[in-house]
Amino acid sequence: MTALLFKRCVMLCAFLMIPHAGFCAGPTQADRATWQDHSLARPLFAPTRRPSPTGNALAGTPRLTGIIENGGVSRAIFMIPGQERGVIVPLQGHIGNWQVIAIGKGTITIREAGQDRLMRPDRDRLSGLSTPDHTPRSENPPETFSRDELSRFAPPASSDTPPPGMPQ
View 1 (cartoon, rainbow, N blue to C red):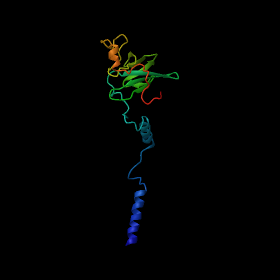
View 2: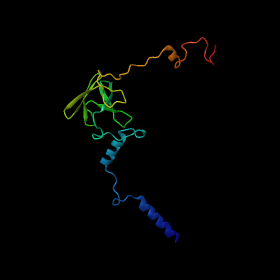
View 3: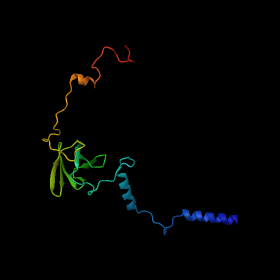
View 4: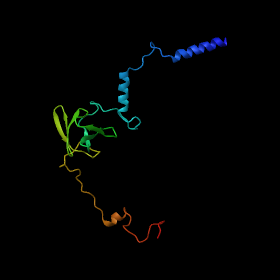
């Protein structure tokens, strides 16, 4: 009786461990390559990891936040609403429905459906679109403080007495 039970256990284990072609087919080589490319395209364990932006995910004009030039290769950095990190787009690359067609000193040109648009980096994180250089950012003049008011915020400029704990 014990020998029969042992024999059945061995047969069951062997059946479970040997792959059977009829029960399940493994992924094809093309599926595996596609999965690997998709998984390795972005940082795997970044807390802010999001899916790649698609053409439909970006409504309106993207916001240009910077231009990178390194070794003669220029790239544009765009911010997408809802994402913490910028998207780096090379020359002739795409961001949504827009294509970067030119990158110059401080400007880029993007195109959508035959419409070209010249953009400058917009570093103001609160606005949605780039503003032209001739538009003032604020209507209010900067605040000015008297010397007495500033003394509330800053330590004294110099003192003959060293701070506590310093050698004399």
